[in-house]
Length: 421
Image 1: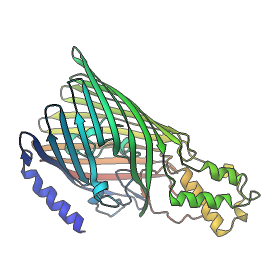
Image 2: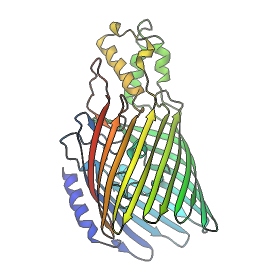
Image 3: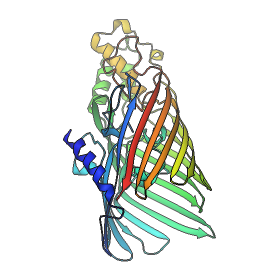
Image 4: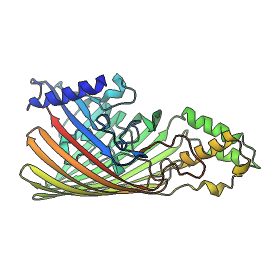
């Protein structure tokens, strides 16, 4: 509660500055924030921005924390070719610390206009909005489409990147390679565990003109750790007699995530035509892991601006194959209570990333002043059976015959004030 009160008063006070708080020739101290509230009409599915959040909004909840942000940034220009950036963000972290609040902390060297080298903690380059994913004022929507932005919890990369830019008349070609490691929580209802990825290797190309941008990106990562719950699940399955659970020992080994690769690819773009803007992203996730199925996701958004107002529509989706645990031919009648719990645990684990939903969103933005905007957005989401990955759900204790993530239609209303200072 104390954190929420501090956040609210900070968000209300900071927009009073229309320029950075403190600027000299070499140092600029600035910030951004969002004071938001969200609610849904579902007793079962709780809204969250991404799968790292262990807290969210269910029916009759008025949730501030999961959609409110406060960020501070320090830019240091060491000389004409070198600089440093530090950014800290509060966003209802499950475990708030200096490390979890540090989103960027890097040194930058730009020997000329074509080349840029960065070392340290940077924003992981996966999205069209990568560099300002947390800066709500920088984009029109009240909430980015979580079909694309919610499935990947990793927000930073500890490593290095190299960017090369060149111009052809009115066209800029920008290419980047990056490598490093990262970590993030992945959460279920009221619980979370930390996942680490290593050997991150990514490349991106963007083609930019005044009124349009096209970006292509491909990244591979290696899963570095197995959580305690995964280890206990595998050990439990391996101890079940194969006359009850056919091929249980081999299946338990296949559940391991250690040293397996996950691949992420995306195609995104922006097109401006007068007062109209078109934004779109499509992503593909594939892996060597049995527990991470192939996933397609994407959105198309049309925005219409007029004076200091903007209306918009977003159509978004995720599509993935579900795992059918009945295909394993487990004799559930012979399972003891703890074995039945393992059976449901496997079902839940194998379908955790199998997100299947479609969302239609409409929204409005009002730029109150040059650094302050009011936004409101209504999402209408159809969630398929076993497709509720992006939401929190209260079925922590499985009931035989009851789906952990049943089919449901959920309406979500979010509104916020976004600002920079």
